[in-house]
Image 1 (tube, rainbow, N blue to C red):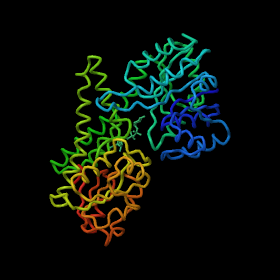
Image 2: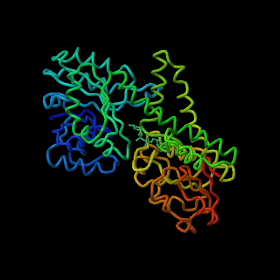
Image 3: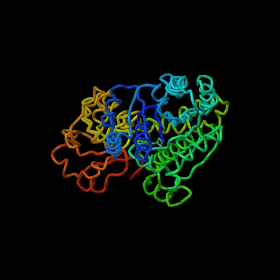
Length: 437
Ligand code: UDX
């Protein structure tokens, strides 16, 4: 099919390249010139494993092209995927859907023949219905310009894999013709075994925020347990392993640590709480405020622990930090707990040196006054304390020998509960972690 993708962030760039890989002809629209030009040259402007190859291959073959014109998009194909961002509003918990509105308003006047616009972005429930009305009103094709909502569940770091092999395809529709088109489009994935759920707009929109709310709840649940473990001398990793063996619970997303961050989970649960308030069901979603509070508290606890470990005064203390990205295999520092903690320690007077295998540049952009080191060992030179905050595999491979003669004091805090605590302790290090003995 000839399809278009509007918005080329993590979601759109991956969707465009992956759909080209499936054999579709793809025209992708990006209004940011630098990003568009990089993509058109086959370069990925963020760190996302396997995306560079996929993109370069499909750009080279001509299967994937880029534009900044809605007129060209409308002329090119009849299936248009909207993949723009819906960040948190600056002064509110609500999601900012202005990019969605702009995409529909920009595209609709060019839709003169039947077309299906497919929203993939995460939106407050009710947005699809509103956008469908706007589309019909503005498109010369009128009711022949249809809308569907088809949320995307990809994880950063696994974006290509998740897009090529989705664990489910959810489509919210109002018209059976839209269902037929999307079933045909996704047939290769359905044939591979991906289940498809066809439902209404509101359910499709809610599936996405409900999934993220559930994942956030799992993480905050185990982090709350970590606090109880600390108060009782219990071990949260043994606890998570043990409850995780129960298939009804499952072990995934029960890694206690400094909490969740990134461009999705934090803002999606806040937007959900806000939307619930607008809908008059705020009480039902109050627990999500606690989930958010527990998550923020984890970060604050690390700052307190770090302060205590350097002797009660952060001013002048030197702290080496491993990790700035919100999770490994990503250079994304949006709402990153690692960068937040580093920033707070710096603002309280510590000399903080951060190293991340991929996110030094993005972190430097977001927080230019921190010092960034070229290696994990360099970040620790003269340190009174080392903080492990993003669980990149290279940090797990570091041993006490690597830091011999490098640090001032042998003190380590594992914020992700993956380091071999016993090995570090046996080498004479003082080690602390969240919820561990
Ligand atoms: C998330 C959802 O997983 C994905 O389905 C959705 O489409 C977008 O939001 P992503 O933001 O890429 O994906 O990251 P994810 O892997 O979910 O991790 C989110 C955060 O939770 C990270 O900061 C991670 O470090 C943290 N986390 C995850 C934990 O603290 N403990 C865990 O056990 C798992």
